[in-house]
Length: 379
Image (tube, rainbow, N blue to C red; front, side, top):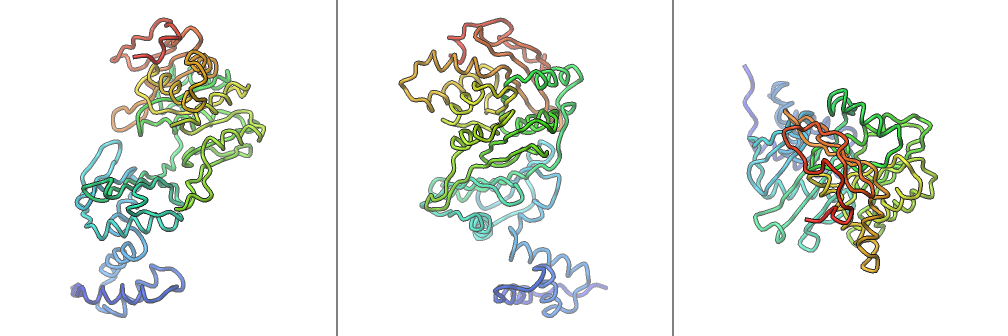
């Protein structure tokens, strides 16, 4: 027969004593177990484990969110203000039974943001950062989020996929050919479609003798090797000190004698530096961009490059620069069960976009022939 579940007062005393110890010696979980044994000695082993786990989440971790992050099948956690918590598992959004109140949500956000040297308050209502374990964090606070604080956590995916996970042998053959030819590649697709994962898989086909410089806003690429160099942007402190932008890193990478350069994702003016880097002879370089199809990807690149070079450069010059720098555009999307797959491959040149291969036969493209480079990117 199990013991009586301890009263809330006993758990509150454990929490109060733990907080009173400014620097608990040893493992925090072990210390919580010791305090719980003193305050509620009649607990069974299973009861003690359950209560200590919850206390650990409340006192050290992220409270009710902790068990969700401990579940390896969960890739994303979404908190849309106080209330039910949503997760993504195997590519499907699921509303969980976990409920957080405003105090728990505020505490979780504070514990995430503070160790990163950042602030989240009314004067800094938006935070985009990365935890030490690689988890990406996005926080939006009132008044920008009028219905309450928003928190999105994207788990660091430890699994490294192969090219075979993105399509049948015919697709793998094309991807391997692109890598071995040293084509400059831009991978496009929506959020969570597998852009970064595909780039990592393609980098995995390179030999150890290739000096590869990885440039990312938030380190996600799972690429390892003796000749791999990693650069990561820094958001800076709450006062803006120490900020290092992606654009600076692209320029720095060229001084490190790379054989190939990989820019994790371009979102703004740094696209101009990325395109310039691809045009300086670093064959086989890669990047990613959010876009629904190849035409949109080219259009976005042109707009972002124009932002970087300024209005003095003619639009046609920008268009020609993009066309000369990028050889291949690869589209990725989600398949059944949340799997990632290559949906289209296009070759880009001064004659426009040309389909190399299209595996998503249910969605025909209007880019089967050459098109006027002046029209690429136009609506």
